[in-house]
Length: 237
Image (cartoon, rainbow, N blue to C red; front, side, top):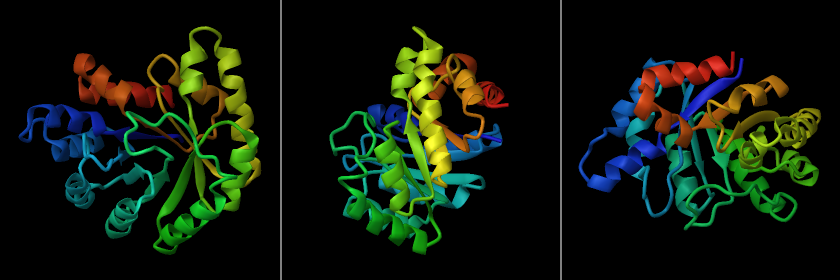
């Protein structure tokens, strides 16, 4: 079964736009679980423009499913993760001013750097995942860091889906097979939505987890949060 982890960053973005505590991020995390999400994802950034470090500390005690923290492994981020001890940490190569994740790791260039960080998290019982593209070299070198999983960066798939779905998914199927052969668990995320998720899952049924935020929260504005989460889960059935 492929799990659905709901990224609640956009709920925090809405809250921060007005100040105060509406919508309430903690309540949103609790409700996502109640409505069927298999996990909660947060991606705190140094400027705290959406999820704040304090949010992460507040949310952790109420997570009864799986808690996934994404981020660039800066000193502050590493300290936060080791304090909170989520079920999973997903390491992304975002610069501090990135609007959203837009590339996977160059794991050949950063292998020594990532190996040390992965080791530190695994010693604390935290599952690790590295955000990667479909390049064979990056996936195989990810495996050499000791990471448990990789998360495929799926924006190129989402961009090409409406034009030619078969062509768009082909490099991801090959990448997923490389990851499986390397003994890596497989996650996916970025621009997956109600239009393209089912096909992606059908082509790569051994996916362990998808992390979806922007599209899901946007759909929830029209369809309601509970209904939207259930609609996304049906794409993974």
